[in-house]
Length: 280
Image: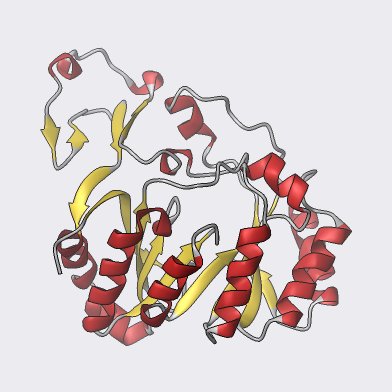
């Protein structure tokens, strides 16, 4: 197999919310969706991008002659950073496998996230194949907007799909993400036919999709398809807003839910759904 290069913007160690056990999550650049509430805006575009934080700049002037180290700007006060650098699958796996003892002790492994990993299909497939060859548990977080052929190709090497379901109404899905949900639904049906293991991950944003009919839609999917093991609620948070400003993009104006709102969502979905429901 020829080596495949990909664009990665973060490799995060000791993750415990991206599948079972202790995991390393590899974040891919590029996504076919542009969700209005995305908390990783630096993941949306395919190529590397510069994030600028003027409030951190001390005026040292060193960035006038920019140098690079491992694909990152050398800024001694973190006023500039590069999101995204080219990596080979072997380089990524070398980083992932450093923590193999933790995976073995906890039942963890490697998770691909993003962005959308299948936006860089060849790179994602090679990483999943190498991880399985190394005996790792694999998980793939996906928005579901890909081809049936790509999804079928990665399925044999993916132990768990973290499958996003953002909006039941396809017109609203189009308005808030840039695409309808028809292909996403058909790919969920495909995973069911392939007897895959799926966690249905549902971002909930106040005033956008915290509606009874959307909760009905989530429960209907979860109960209809045997592949879905449980539903995970992902409440909107504002942690990504500084990154929008650093990328010189408009900052989202959604409200962060209160604890009472989040508990009400959990109760509403649990009452509707026969499968387990929890926060991610």
